[in-house]
Length: 306
Length: 319
Image 1 (cartoon, each protein chain N blue to C red):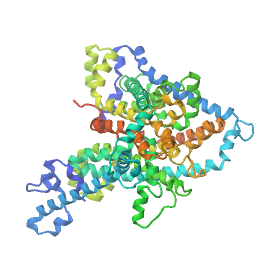
Image 2: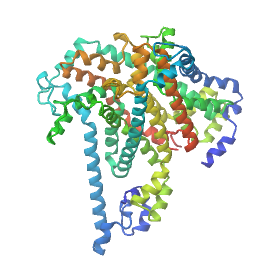
Image 3: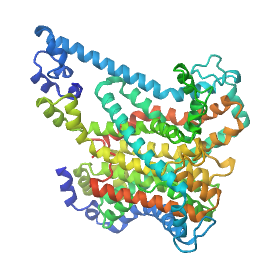
Image 4: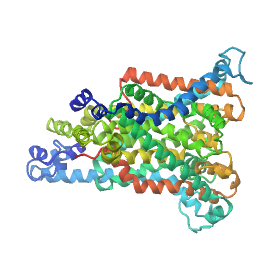
C-alpha cells in the first residue's frame, strides 16, 4: 500500500522521456473504439427513446415511449423477474462459489486444478448449447430429471420451463449452474491474496475454524464480494440468451426479462421507440447501481481482489 | 474446524505443536484430540485431520461430477442411434459416430467454425493491444486527463449489452456491416477493452519502479519500453485477458443474432438454434452439433486453464 502512494507522487515516465505529446497516441485506439461503438450508441438510443414514435407509443410528447413502457404490464412482470433473478443468482452463486473456493484451496492439494476446471467448464460453454441441453434435461417423460424424480414417485406433467409459475426458476437454476464457477474463481484469487502474516497472527491467537472464516476471511474477502454484487447486477441486466433460447420470455410473458422484451419490440415488432426507451431504462438502472456501489461501498471495481 | 492453518509456515507450526508435527497438524484444541489419550494425542489429531481432508475431497469430487453431468449427457446423446436417443440414462450402450457424419454432410460446419475463429481471434488481438496501450498510458505514463478517461472506461464496464443492441444494430447497418465480419469484430473489441484496461492497469501499478528508471536511462523509446520492458513482465495477466476475451467473444449470442442473419456468416453460438427445429425428430444429430459447438472452447480451456488461473493469481512476473 505504502509503495503505491510513493509511486503516485513520482512523475510519469513520459515526462522523464520528454515525449509527452507522442505519448497521447497510446490512448487513441481505446478512446476511438469507446466513442464509436459505445459512446455514440448510448447517445443515439437516448435520442431515439425521446424522438421516435411507433405503434406502441402513448401520445406524441417526448416521453410517449417511456409512458408506453411504464403502462405495459409486461414491463412490470419483467421487473419482478429480474429482481428475483438478481437476488437468487447473486446470493446463491456467491455462497456456493465462495464455499467451493474455500474448500478447494484449503483441502484439495494436488487435485486443485481438476476440481477448479470441473466447475469452470459450464462458464466456457456457450449459452446456446447450454439452453438446449437443459431443455432436454427438463423434458417430461424422457428427460433425465424426470428419470430421477420418477424414483421418488413424482411425475412432471410438462417441462418446468413450460409452466407459468416455474419457468423463471427453471432458467435461474441453469444460470446458477453456469456462473457459480465465476464466483468461485474470484474468491480463489481473493484467498490467495490474504497476507500470510494475517494467517499466522490468527493462528497464534488461536483463531481457527468457523471463527477464522467469519471474523477474518469474510471481511478480508469483502472487495471480491462487492465486485461480485456489481458484476451480478450488470450480468442480470444483460441476461438474454438463456431466457430467449429456453422460454422466449413465455409462457405468456411469465419469464419475460428486459433483454427478451427489447429484442421482441426492437427487432420483431419493429417498435424502435419502445425498445429504445426500455434500453435507456436498463442503462439508468445500471448507472444507478454503479453510483450506489460507489456511494454505499465506496469501492472501485476490482477483479484482482484488491 | 482447523483447516485454514494448512498454509502456515513450518516455523510457526512448531511453536504451537511441538514434536515433529507437520504444518497441517498445528491446529490447537481439536475436539477429537482433546478426548483421546494424552500419549496418542498428536497421532489421533493427525488421523482425524487426514480423515476429514479425505471426506472433503470426496465430497468435492462427487459435486464436481454432478456439475459435469449435463456436459456428459450432451456428449452421450450425440453418440446414440435414433432408437436410443430418448433414453434418460447417461450411458450410451451402442456408440455410433453416425450423427456427426450426418451433421457434417448436411451443413457447412467448417464455415461456421471459420467465422467464429476470424471474429474471435481478431477482436481478441485488438482488445489486448488497445487495452495494454491505454493501461500503459494511464498507469505508467500518468498523462494529464488520463485519470478522467480511465474513469469513463470504468463506467463503460457497467453498460449492459442488452441496452446497446438496438442502437448498435442501427449503426452497423449504416456502416454496411450487417453480415460482415467487421460488424462483430469491432463491437466485441469495444466491449472488451474496458475489462482489459482495468485488469492490466491493476497489475501495471504493481510493477517495480526501478525497472522503469533503468529503461529511461537506457533511452528506450516509449513503444520499445512498452513492448520490450512492460509487456514481457505482464505476460501472465496478458494471457488471462486474452483467454477471457476469447471466451466471451466466442460465446457471444445477442449481438451475433442481430448482425449475422445470413447462414453463411453465422458464428457457432447461432447454430444450435438454427438446427433445433431441423433435427426435432433426431436429438442425436442436434446434440452432435451442440457437442461440436461446445468442444473447441472446452478443450482449449482445459489446456490453458493452468496459465489462465495463474494469470489471475500472479499478475506480473515478480523479480
